[in-house]
Length: 76
Image (cartoon, rainbow, N blue to C red; front, side):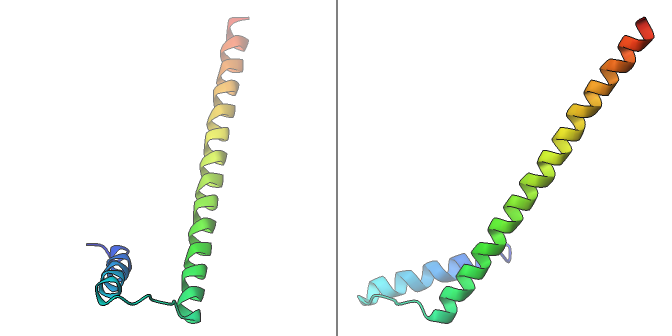
């Protein structure tokens, strides 16, 4: 199990314990803040990854067009 799976597993165990005891858990403000910060970082990383992927794909598309121009120039 990787280090990323441990917090999720811990949260599941806490929720199961709360349900079994019949209590409703209220998240603490600091816990909510941590979840918000982690979610924000995750969204930032996903957007950054999509941006990098878009740039790479756009460069590949451009290089294919340039290769086509070289081939046309050689045949003329």
